[in-house]
Length: 216
Image (cartoon, rainbow, N blue to C red):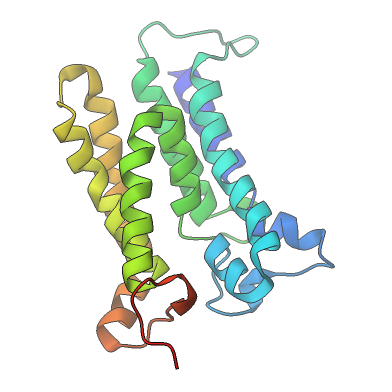
């Protein structure tokens, strides 16, 4: 159990490395949390500082989800080794979720982070690259139809459990299905403010990505 606890802790520490705040230090000390929605994620970075800034933010945030999920479960730590009683599949899920928790509540940045979507994408790529295609397709489809990034993210997350079930849920992919369900619930939770603004009609929309909208 020592291996399990230590790797989950390491994953959380990696997740706490905020892509927006690290990138901001190379752009003159920008703190994304001080502008726009106050969120430290790639969407707020894109809206306020452009796609180049947001690209590096997203790259770091996706990478810190992929790295602990793909790398840590099979890594033999000095003096600890590999615990044969710990499932590698379940450990990968645990490491991934710990990295996401680190992104949302980062130790290094006052526990004020992003909403976890980009980091969840990195975890998803590590666990099941094939699942990334339907989830990303739903995200793009909803975005170009609605223009709402938050809505697209929630719909994409909710599609993940359905995609796993359609692929044939078995005992072998129970960890993946569990991750997909937890991911969808977590994204709904972290995007609850977006959903409230959608109901109120005050959510910010990116019209330039929409296919069907009036141009004036």
